[in-house]
Length: 48
Image (cartoon, rainbow, N blue to C red; front, side, top):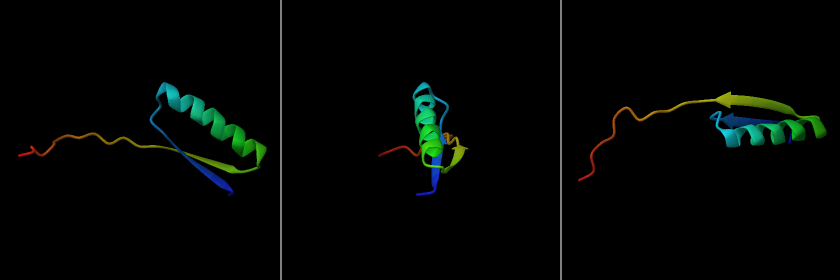
């Protein structure tokens, strides 16, 4: 494994996960890719 892909939502729990991912990449000389994405339901189909 040479790369860790870290997806975040910027919540409190994600901060601890980012620190862990960063430590792993330093320890094993890896690359860290950080991504953020939002998806909101603007409309939801009614269920019968």
